[in-house]
Length: 62
Image (tube, rainbow, N blue to C red; front, side):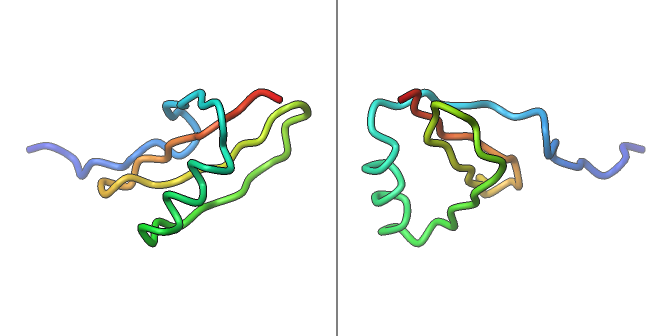
């Protein structure tokens, strides 16, 4: 018997983008919740969760 799957909260993929503001606006237009976490100097970043509960980071180095 397999144990219930639990998505990782800290270990997650990150997507490097060229314009995080545009990506954020596009996601918000699709009613995807944006989660803000710890500030990272020199970066604009936020997180979303996929339909399976996996945390995904969106990051733009400024």
